[in-house]
Each structure stands twice: as C-alpha cells, then as structure tokens.
Amino acid sequence: MALPVESEKELSIGGFQGIKKIRGLLVGIDVVDPPSMWENQEKQVVKVDMEETTVLEMFGDEDSFELKDGKFSFYIPYVEAGKNPHKNSIYNRCWLESAKEQGKKPSELIGSIVTLEKQPRLLFQKYIIDPDTKKAKLDDDGEKVKEDILAVNEAGLPNHFCFAADETADSTSLQGYVREKIVGLNRKAALRKILIDPKKAQLGEFKDMLNNGTLADYLDLVLVGDGDNAKFQEPEM
Image 1: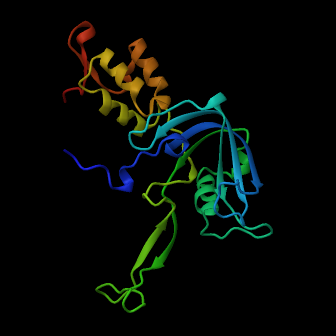
Image 2: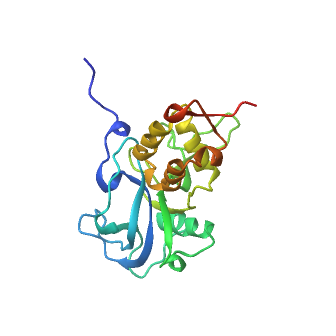
Image 3: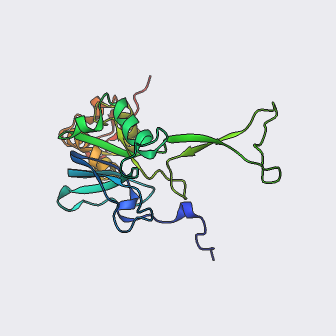
C-alpha cells in the first residue's frame, strides 16, 4: 500500500488555475475594482480580456481543455486608487517588463495575437533573517545572504501571466521538442504522439507536415524501414 500525496507540489491544480500558456487575441486591458472573491479588496486590479484563445500548455499532467467561445479573462494585482505601481510589483515585473522584452507596451498589443505564459519572474530580493539573532544571515565571506522572491504561489508554481515569444514551426526549440518526441516512432505512432501532446495546440504545422510526408526532411530525420512501419531516426553521420 502507498501513502497518499502529502506535498502541495503534487496536488492537482485543475481548471483555469492549471493553465500555463495561452495564445489569443488581446482585446482589452482595464483597471477595475477587484472581484468579490479576492482577499485584498483595497487594491484595484488590471483586467485582461482575450478572444480566439487557445490553451497551449498546462502545468504538469493536467488535461488541456477548450475555452468557451475562445474567451478568457484574468486579473493582475495593481494598486490602491490614485497610486502608482511599485517597480517590484507583479504588474511591473511580470506584465510591463515582459511586454518591453517584445519591444512593446501592453496597450500597443491590443488587437494583436499574443502568447502569454505564467513565468516565475524575479520580483525582488530580501535578506534572510536569522531567527535567533534577528539579524541578516552571513555567508562564509561575511556577506549578507539574500533570497529571491519570485512570482509563484505557495506550491512554487508561477501564477501570473507574462508576454512570451511565439513558438512556431520555425522555432528551433519547438523543432527539437518534436524531434525528441517522434524519433523511433512510425508515422502513425508519431501522429498519435503529437495529437495527445500537452503542446498539441502549437504543433499543428508539424501535424500537417507529418500528413503530407515532409516532416522527416524538415526535422533533418530519415525514415528507416518499409511502408507504414518506417520509423523516424537520426541520420547516420
């Protein structure tokens, strides 16, 4: 007999909270009052609205799902009315800075197809306090020890969306991902692997190439064997 799960990191997330990465049309960014279920009712939030949205990736082994009518909304913690957000805030570190990395302000992306991903961004660092001395801990060199405060939940998973670069069939990382998945498989097994993959929404172009017989050449692989039993393999050097 086995013990039941006792680690928060092993608990199922499920539903919207289990979404890690999405892609869709950004249609609105608005400062609004917090929803009633939020614990902090003093601070406003930024409401982000998406349409034509596809779930690209879920956390862990969570099952992906389709969003009703392709619509998706989420909230970003903001500030009390009349105040400006701090540079170490989730709003700045996750939302503004990730958009800047794409060469844009978030508002400039309204009306565009964007990819958003929950990322464990660094918010700030703080000194680790020794519970006995109530002073900052020191390392072997006598320097104060700091710890990173990341945009993650209690289970250590990122829980705030950031703008991310699109991964298409031209992406070397996505090509490598698919290569690793299909090497050693025949066409039928490779197709099944792609169709059930957590990133299946990103793999449509690879599925099309598999169906029209061009995938092996595109990924610099070879098909070894005859007919339907031919398997994708790395070419011999």
